[in-house]
Image 1: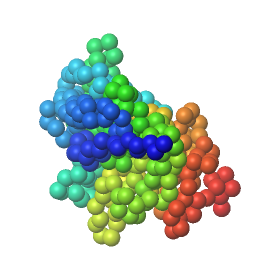
Image 2: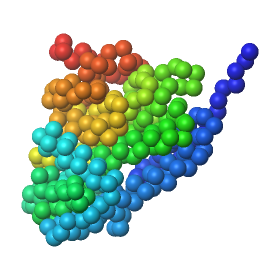
Image 3: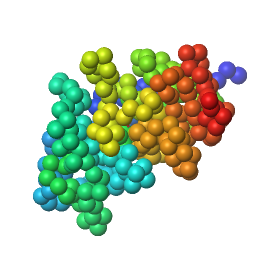
Image 4: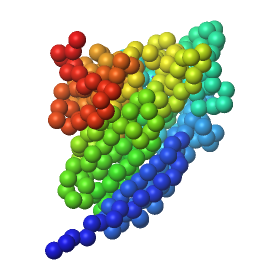
Length: 327
Ligand code: AMP
Ligand code: MG
């Protein structure tokens, strides 16, 4: 007997500062997507640094003044961000916002800041100045002009939330794509693993270096190609090294994290990017439940041990190197 192939419901829209694509299989696909859209917009309204009324903007406007009560959502994400700042020894730091601001990333006045300005902004970056009170659900930044930015972690949280909404609505097979921050829910409707492309770092979105075969996994990439400007023949991108105030420049140009939870994957992709190949691989190897693929400037690809058999290189411009026995 010939089985009918189930048709997915697909919706593309803009939220969280990026293009979102939700593809859900099953009878409740459309209803589940409606609920997910609502939830994503709610998360954006709470956590966007570009919306004056967001909880993050309220925390930033009251830096050095008084604690701000926030929703459990925002508290949870900020708390996670602080934990990843600690774990990464400050490679990840959500208080990087003043530095991002002076580079003008995502504005129409992008440019290289003067060294005095950068020094002053860098003096405001320190995740240890985030004062959390879990009992009252409040957050305070302990110095005036400090500011936080959840751009490196909020999409991961949002992907996990969409996954929960889908499961609550009996959608067990889906692709949640938050601007390249992907969650492959369950398996394909035919019971096979999903094939998820790993973005080509020098090419346009949609071109891949290879594919990952997974089920029920988050796949998140941090890359210098996501947002950048070019000046004097040099590329300046949006992932900052908090120790210098400059875009991270250690030879790594993209990091992809495969994990069960997307909030972890999102935070870890940024941590690993800033830590660089050696420290980054060691860091992810020690992290239970996460694996990583690193792409370096010289077109080499390195992966943690858990990736064996899951990643297939398809682009011959890249060399897939064994990290342990590398040259
Ligand atoms: P991602 O693409 O997840 O690596 O996140 C990059 C975004 O996070 C940037 O656009 C900034 O908003 C913010 N960001 C940049 N550098 C850092 C950093 N070192 N730690 C935390 N957030 C950062
Ligand atoms: Mg990230």
